Image 1 (cartoon, helix red, strand yellow):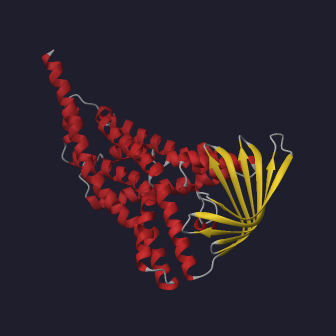
Image 2: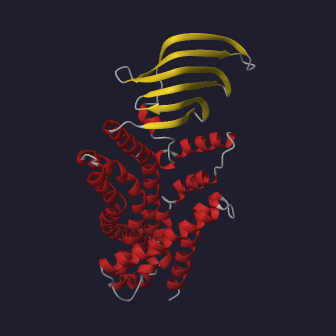
Length: 372
């Protein structure tokens, strides 16, 4: 009995030991990959915008900060791969893996703290991508649009923006043209319980900054009965209405999937389907919002057995190997997404297939190492 209790305590100590071994290379990976990807994916474009287009430096810095969370979503799995690869490379190089196995612990059992880290990072990444990333991406787009509008007039034709509320269509905005903060030939359709209840037309609508509302001018409000028939109309010279949309929302066009949460993207897809639009690409993006965060879990499964070798690898070798694996992983993502867009496979399979293949390879390597 006493021996069994000591055995359990020993296993818990080993789990904590391995988990702590993973933390330092994980933090190193976060810093290293953030530096690499932010330079290649954000800084280069912002430098061009500052030098060639006269974008203010302080605005460029703000946009960089806003865009960084979207990059971090992809960095979490990379850092997890590097952490497991380096940690198990060190444990293997110092013969600690051999010592653990000699004490009766199988290689499969040693994977418990590794998979715990992978699952923990996946959940944190998913939460981060749902709460922080959409707001940061939208803020970056709005700031860029507002900055451009200050330097030169912004003209857009056929502005069309739907507004959802709790998954149901609430309102549709349409304007023939929009320049700066004024819309021309505006139509606003209001919906109640899924039916069209009101149509408002106006010659123009101007944004009132101080009142945070739109001032519609020279318009008519058509009220509809519950059966859809015309009830009566109201003519107006000026009508101020408070909507959640600002000029930057219209000038920026439709939201990208990166600017929506999973729930918002589902509502957007439902609306597009009702309109008869093609939604395959959006369905792939919806599944990618789950598949990318959980890549941390499959990279943990791959990195640990991949790091087991007779000799201890340096951080530079581990970083290089991680980059190669990640490069191949994202090539696989591009291929499966293209196949999914061609409708050869389902959108869900197109998003999750790289994770399935990576997990399969990781399990195969682990099973080979376990019998050696």
